[in-house]
Length: 245
Image (cartoon, rainbow, N blue to C red; front, side, top):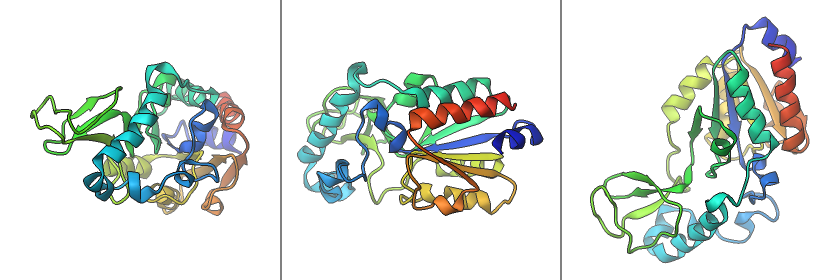
């Protein structure tokens, strides 16, 4: 059991991968479910560099709509986000959340040691100089970069299909040192994140656990798994882990 693992390994460093499933109970749509975002729009039209080059107005409109749904505190973190923030604050070892999500719910819950590997919806990036800035309002071709003054180069600071996720060297370094790897609310079919569990398993010393609404495509790769709503199973798991510290 995970409690025994914690006691036997003197507070191992923990890496937690989170996906859209952890934010679903906060009211944010997932991408790959039957009624998810990609069932309503084509990836090729809104989430590739080619789409932005071909139709910047259409891409901006898609992300502006999503940004409006997040800005101003309209969406709140749920019990699963709060449990992970509690784990970071109370666990004696290092706890890092690596999220595929572009929302800001982990931050709102209090998580500080956080990597947004797919970028952040409430930020913009200049394609000309790489400057990244907080951006809560609408974005369009007429906006300029406050660092280089380039007009029309601002884009959502999100990783599109065909682009490399952010901070991968740092993430793999953390995976190489962790003693516990958790995967929460992920589909298990988006790489490179879907391969993290295999990377950890090669070391044969870290424990791997999947916490999900249902088995992911990579469920068989995990040593342990628990299934159910994130707001139920994540707080319960964190409670057991902290009790065993």
